[in-house]
Image 1 (cartoon, chains in turn orange, green):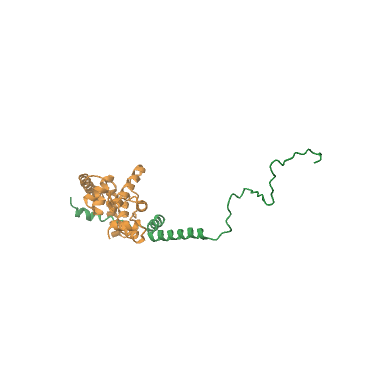
Image 2: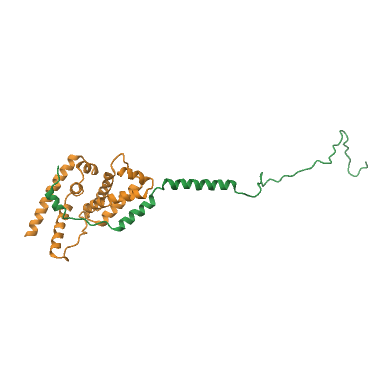
Length: 178
Length: 98
């Protein structure tokens, strides 16, 4: 069943339609919010608020698809978060510190932590584009609609994000190897 | 622009946690609060309202009182009244003999 059909049913108070939509988008939206902010708690708040907006009928199917609307909602909240707490721009550290596991696990966490930190250092527009394109595997058109930019702009941001990420990861790897 | 498989392998090392059950509860509560009532509910609501109005119309009540309850009405009866013939009025002073 399409999102549009489910939204129509949800607007008539259908519980099953709500559960279906929530089930479809809960995890992707949470992942996106978590990777943008680095905080599970903040990501959950953002997902909650986006769904509350949907229940209050703020979604207009004539303007955007449901997916674009929901991702845009999370993205806008993340931007507000970074504007409101501009002094605390670095994402919170929700990952384990890696001091208590066996060597393999410790190495795995180290790698994940390197990736997380390298992504967190990217400017927010590059980070958004990278997460939506590489992690969420959305098309360039969809990413452009979500971040309200042109496809060319998104391509440029992706290029810079990948470049910055490679440099950062290689630099970190060299730092670890020393 | 294509996806960079080499980079993707590195990126996939950063996994995300799962959202908590608390989120599900919060969103479900928000849904229940703001959920539009299904059409069947509205229909039953309209039927119930109609029944209440009909009951109020036909409910037996005491004798109907008409008119303004604050108004006091005085009635005079004209039975036994005999009109005085024209010119038959005589003014008699007090104490004078008729």
